[in-house]
Length: 403
Ligand SMILES: [Zn+2]
Image (tube, rainbow, N blue to C red; front, side):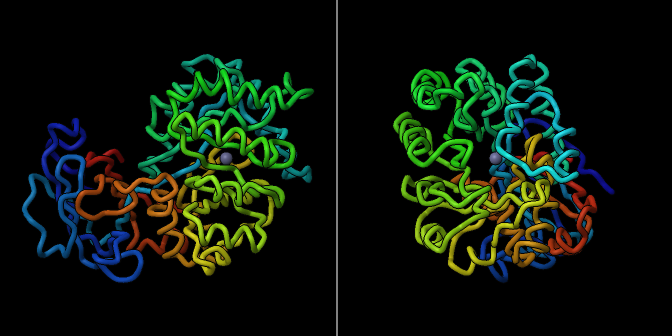
């Protein structure tokens, strides 16, 4: 396969224009640019100028560019937007996974294993881990990735996790309320005071978002409300781990507080579905978690039919979903969650952008960030049609070819 020549791969400031031509099937995610909700264009081209998309349209009308890349009829789509991952961790939970696949159910308590390993890890080890998984995701077409703290659970360890995350991505979430750590097990209220007080003071400058694991065995609705409200008062925007293992108040709390996203949404009442459909909170589904815990699938069809905005994400973490592959999540969503291939592709790109309140990613129209994933396939439907096959053949991020 031909690689582009010239300045591709240098800094955005010095990069010229690149035309990706002869795209057999292009997902623009703009209904004004092509057919259907994906704005699908056949025989298309995209022109990048520096780090931005300058032009999108039929290949035969493409303006001249400094460089040209021939997509040879393959399919292109916006880089995946993975709006939910937990990449700052130490250690490994192979044994737990192996035991669970031998019949033991998953519980939130397994997080404590990773907390101990993360506290014991040095900064260099944690940086290397995050860099490794961000690169792994990029090779699978992910050009925007959110990641969280939540395995430190002391003031210093949470602040450290956020600083490390911030060196690898702009989308950083403070998750001091992942679980109550063992040293506070006898007095969870004291831990909530720590999270909403000194820990928030130390962490707020390093994060954009605040998250809570609202779940039996983690934090109840009142605790989650106190934590999210305190974070919002410091300028952090809420997102919530909601309704994963049990029915509960998480989803409705997320909608009530104007959270950007309610994540998991596996166990929903009709009232939860209505709240998501009527509010501005995105329902982010994380099928890797159900896959890796042999749990019941979230019902994407029910959410879509009600009118909710649905995103797909990996939840990449060492305990319950150790995948960084958005193509894998697309395949699961189509096979097991009632989504059409088009809906799953939208949810993994534009849906993720909505969950991160980003308007510059998740689409390929002029002005967007020049993040493009090229598949070794004639259509993005192949992401679901050919599960487990490494279809990503090239990736541009901010106009630079990175894969
Ligand atoms: Zn998570």
